[in-house]
Amino acid sequence: DRQIIDPLLNHAYSQGALTFLNPQGPFHTGVCWAHSRFQRSISYLADFHPEKPRPSDAQADKIVSQLVSMNKVVTIPGFENVDRFSMVYEAKITAALGAWYRRCLFSGDCAHRAFDASSENPQAMRARMDHLYERMFDRAQMLFLRLYGKSFGITDSHAWLLVDMIPTRAAPRFRNRFASLTRTGYELKIVDSNYPMTVITIPYAYGDKTLRYKGDEILPHEDYDGDLVDINHALKAYCVPPKKNRR
Image (cartoon, rainbow, N blue to C red):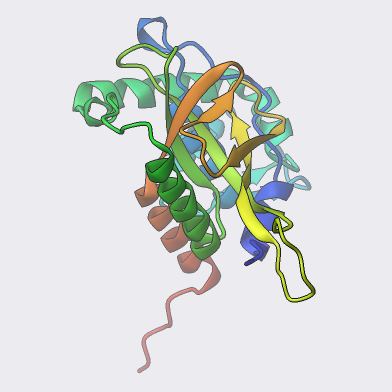
């Protein structure tokens, strides 16, 4: 099996996590989509400088806005990681997530994501999970998963960040010295915005129709891949500055 080991993913792990839970947003709903997208953005695009003075309120507003935009690496002075920064500026980040979610609602961007027409069957679920594993390996970056659960409500959904995915294996029924272990499914390592400081393991076995999580049956969909495109462009621009024009 391929191992998902990548310096960029390891760097994102080391940056820390938002310390506050998925807050209440417009219409008494959570803003889990925005929370997860912001967590991914700050994990990759924040450049912390704890030796410098902390930002002013105006500077902190600009930092949060730039992380929502995801178009550049953002210097964060006075802090050493995401944990510390989000503890101090929870109110500013929460307000930005609510505004982001409102823009999603009123622009129509959320509308086509509000329903799930997928059928629940073992074959489709296996293909979905195998595809996610290939995507996880190809990207070696956090993937945003949009979720639909039976208890969520007809137009409601949730979100996770998929931070790792490990194949599970079992010995074949009839063993011999040439037999290899057979893949039986995966362990998904996810970050749920309702428990942002913890990496949670979700088991999946071939033959399952859904993922099971806290008593619910869930169908995951990868989404917001465009965010990773923007993030990678920003990282490339930061790490490889444009060449100066020759005279």
